[in-house]
Amino acid sequence: MRNFLLLFLVLSVSASNAQEFQAFTIYNKKGRKVAPDAMVKNLANYDVVLVGELHNNSINHWLQLRLTKALYRLKNGRVILGAEMFERDNQDGLNAYLEGKISAVRLSDSVRLWTNFKTDYKPLLDFAKEHRLKFIATNVPRKYASLTAKQGITSLDTLRAIEKRNMAPLPIKIDMKTPGYTEMLTMMGDHAGSTAINFVAAQAIKDATMAESILQNLVPGTLFIHYNGNYHSKEYGGIYWYLKQKRSNLRVAVLSVEEADNIDLPFPEKDFVATEYNLVVPADMTKTY
Image (tube, rainbow, N blue to C red; front, side, top):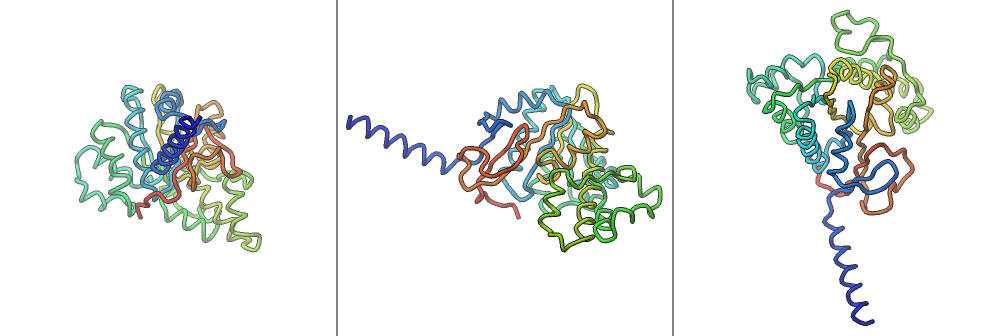
């Protein structure tokens, strides 16, 4: 009995120590832990995978690259990449880099790059370049989202036709009850009034444009992997909602991400809608900025 208790204590301490060094846990929609290879195998069956991210989370970006490489192998190269971090009017510059016409140093001359581009998104872009994959700049130019946030969605009606080509067709349907948008309104409070409505509309023009960009570039038998902030697809809102509005039969999987103090606790820790796969990362994970 004494030996059994000693063994139990040793195993308990070992398990506790292992959890201290665990970088992530993946749960499926039913809250069950899933091995990464099982997740990859299943995701290969979809038309679109929306990969949510916490923009400054290092393990999140590492996993994105690993996931992309694994899906590329499983799909025999039949993948298309796309990202929120690149805006539609910068596609020509992005293509020039992918085709080797300009260097990484010159890329910033023609493409608006995020501050964490070099560490977090360049590896994905370079993977596409190496394997001659399409990488789609899916997002609306930020100046139009900013205009919407300040003056409302109707302000976009005043733009020239050439400018409107870089966004989803107007008018854009906005359902304030969709996941994410309701949360935004709640966070801003009822007193925010039109400011809150405009803020949600700015989010919606991004979501609708990214969805349209994905739909425009879909190829039968090819998987479209899209990287976006978690808020743009969490709980089946945002991009997912707009995709389904246009193509209800489209097979879309959402990979969500959450931070937790203990990533090994029963999932979920808080009340939210789980998606196909839910990545839980330590709250103290190193941030890239």
